[in-house]
Length: 328
Image (cartoon, rainbow, N blue to C red; front, side):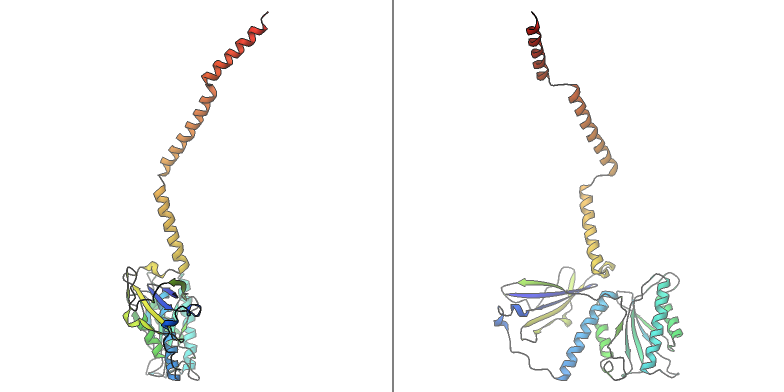
């Protein structure tokens, strides 16, 4: 029996999806269960929210790491709060100012923004990369730019934790906009983000086994599984389906390198180890090469100066016979 595995690598996390694609379902017909009933509109909305949450988890985990900021941008309750349309203009101006300040310091400005105005007074949740050049931090930049853009409240900051896995933050942000993203005159999206974010792509591979996968997945060495997010069920066609998340026990900054750079680093490290294994110190290598070259030259010269003794004797005998024939 064959099935496919999709793997999403995002920072210190690995999301794994196992399913039976259409071309292999003939071999697994015995595993098919009753086809799920048609979903109600409410169930469809919930499924769409879960899908949006999964995508947001990948973006958060791939682009933000411990020490980055989750900032809540508010408006002073003593002053008139803007409507959603006016708040868009304030946020656009805010992004322009912050991006400019980051560029001055040679840094990229990366963010994910969520706006909520239905459950409570209008406010914004901003997740951004944290910078510190020794004189100014991201908190200073956000505070100044928020005031300059027209924001009236005081920003509240929360540092992202050390786990490197931000599924709870993603669930909270999606829940914040569950009633407003599709509303007329609203923001028409659950969240917005900068274009420079890494969007993890799946790695696909086909597996052949005699039986279906285990319902209790085993994490790879150095990782643990988030049990709350482990799902075993059936897909739309009634075939088994599994999804789970692995989180690294001890994340390191290199975990957030882009996939291409990570592979390049691994290749360079492998090549360097091979060079170190084979190489000798440069001065020693030079002396060995000089000695080898000099020895080869001396042997060649020696061969030219000293002909073979047997050949020389034969030559003398031949010369002696020639002279004897010439004598009358």
